[in-house]
Image 1 (cartoon, rainbow, N blue to C red):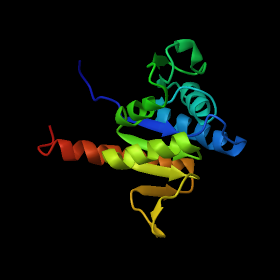
Image 2: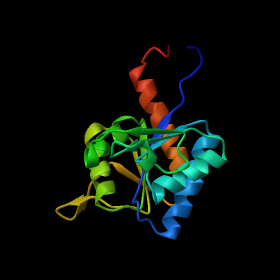
Image 3: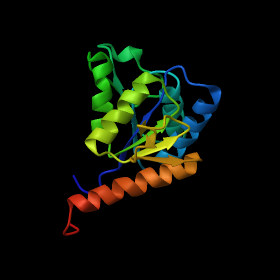
Image 4: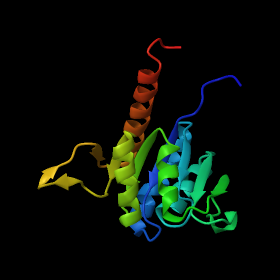
Length: 171
């Protein structure tokens, strides 16, 4: 295999997202695809479906890490539906399969993925999502942005920085 491996970005968010969150996710998906990134998500509805829809419309590749054992539970915008049978534990696979994570809105499942991203050292960009604090002090690790453009730019930059740190000789 030749060429440069595309950057993989996980986009996380609630299955029961608001229309505003879905609009943000769809734009993020389109911008990620235009940049040549692969989108990984939980593969179901809400933010996950919207990011895949945006990526597909821009000609991108989308991968859904599904909680159940049936690929048909995935949304119709997935290029690849991967059933795991892991339930909520699939959140770890979503995060660890990525080089950067973008959180959009979200419920408790998203919060668990945020925790996993922080714990595993994945670059994490937040767009209208949870804020982390401990004893009233903000916890570093979530780079808060205001627009889909910023979210995509920062996640791709962070993923590239991570790659460079893994290859100190530039090969």
